[in-house]
Amino acid sequence: MDQAKIGKFIALCRKKQNLTQMQLAEKLNITDRAISKWENGRSMPDSSIMLELCNVLEISVNDLLNGEVIIMDNYKEKSEQLLLELAKQKESADKRLLSLEILIGVLSMTILLGFCFIAAFLQMADWLRAALIAVGFIVCIIGVVFALKIEQTAGYYECAKCAHRYIPTFGSVLWAPHINRTRYMKCPKCHKMSWNKKVLTKK
Image 1 (cartoon, rainbow, N blue to C red):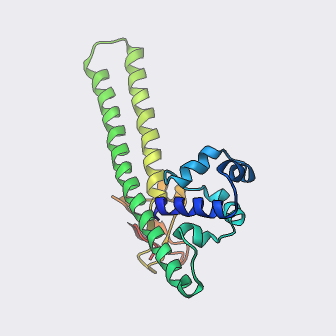
Image 2: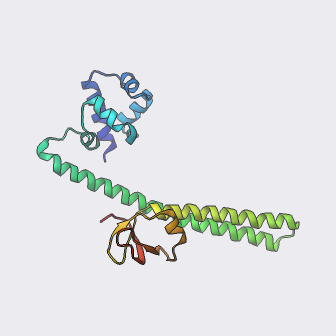
Image 3: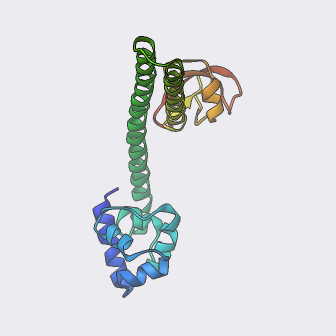
C-alpha cells in the first residue's frame, strides 16, 4: 500500500466533506495530530477506526486502502491487486520476524553461557554464583518463549499429509518435537500427525 497516496486521498475526501482536521478528529474521537500523520503519509488509520473513517468520508474501505475511488468496472481487479499486496507485506513482515527469532535465540543462549562461564571461572560467593546461573537460565527461558511465539505466529505450517496450511496453537509448537522449523504436530484439518514444515504463504 502507498501510504503517501492514501494520505493525500484522505485529505482530499476530508476537504470534499468540508471538514477541518480538527472536525474530523472530533467525529472519530481522536487527536488532530493523528489525522495530520495520516495525511502526510507517516502512518495509517488503525483497523479499529477504519470503518468509521470511511463512513464519515463516504468512501469504501477498498477505496481507502487503494488511495482512490474504485470504479465498479475495475473493482475486482483492484481488490485482487490489494490482496496480493497485503499478502506480500505479510510475507515480508514474517521474514523479518523469523530473522528476529534467530537473533533472540542466539542472544538468549549467549547470555546463559556467558553467565555460566563467569560463575564457573571467577571467584565469588556461592550465593552470587548461584544467582548468576539462575538469572542466566531465566533470561534464556524468556528468550526461548518469545522466539517460540514468533515461530508460532509468523507464517504458517504445512501438513505433510494433506498440504493444509495453518497457524498452530502455542502449546502445539512448544511441545512438538522439531528439526529446525519443521515440527511433528497434528493437522487441524486431517487430524493426522506428521512433520509439518514452516512456510511463509497461505497458498
